[in-house]
Image 1 (spheres, rainbow, N blue to C red):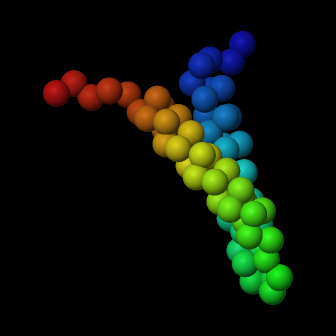
Image 2: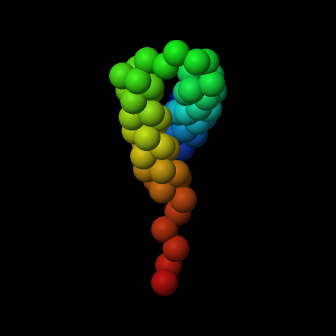
Amino acid sequence: MLSDRDSLLRKLHELRSEHRDLDTVITRLADGGTIDQLQLVRLKKRKLLLKDEISWLESRLIPDSIA
């Protein structure tokens, strides 16, 4: 059975991949001439939400240091 750490790492990998894919799509849309502004805003918002979730997962994976 997978540990919590393994499942968090898998989820982190999936989110990073989706974040990169969205970056590519956003760049192509912006370079493509006619831009659907609403779609572009939605994609950027989704990308920011992914970034927040990635940061949260990363913080969960880093052990607390004893100060």
